Image (cartoon, rainbow, N blue to C red; front, side):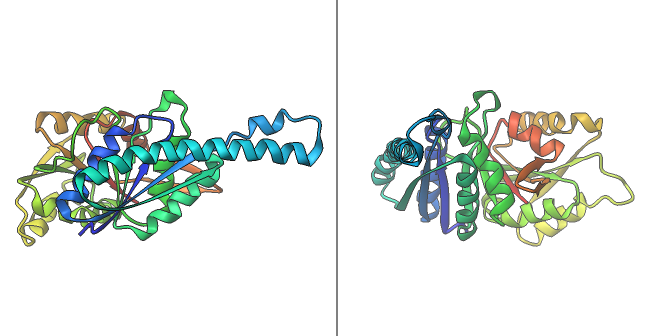
Length: 277
C-alpha cells in the first residue's frame, strides 16, 4: 500500500517535479518517505595529476569527494524544507560517489521500499542523474514511479491508463499499481496490436472488476515503430493522468539495455509513468 517510499533527489537537475510528487503522495497516503541525493565525483581531475604520485591523487580525490558531498547536501536541503512544511514522516541520505557506483547503490537501496520515485531522464542534458532511473528499474525488484521533468504539482491519479500486452511484465505492473487503480475514478486498458486469438484485455477488465475496479478497453492497431506514439495519443485524448506499464529490457555486464517502447517512453513521456520490471 505504498507505506514506505523512496525518492531520488537530483543534484544536477531541477528538483521540484519529484519533490512535489513524492511529498504530496506521502502526505496523502500517510507514508514514510526517505530521500536520497548523490553528489557525483569527477574522475577527470584525477587524470590531470601527472606529478606528485599517490599523495597528490589522494588529495585531488579528497577535494572531489568534498565538493560532491556539498552538492548532495544542497539538494537534500530543498527536500527537507518542503517535507517539514508538509508535516510528513521522512528521512534523508546523502553521499558522494562516481556515477557507476551511484547507480548500483540507489538500485540496491530501492529494494527496501514499496516504490521508488525518480525524475525522467533528459537525454540531451548529459547529466549523471539521468542514469539513476534505469538502475532503479533493473535492480529494485519493485515499482518505479517516473515523473516527467515538465511536471508541475502533485500526482493526479483520477484516471489511470494501463499499457497492456498480456506479458508478465505488464501483469506485474498492474499488481504493483493496485493501490492507484483501486482509488481511481476511471481506468482505461490500452490494448495495442492485440491478436484476437490471444487477446486478454477483456479478461484483465474482468479481473479488475472482481477487485471493484471499473475499467474499459481501448484498442489500437499501429505499426510496431509507432506503439509509443499511439499510447501517448490515447493518454492525451482520454486525459489519462497516470500510465502503468511493464519496463522491458535487461541488464548485461553492467550495461543497461531498454526495450524499444520503454526507451521511447523514457524520452517522451508526458504524464507520470509507473513501471515494473
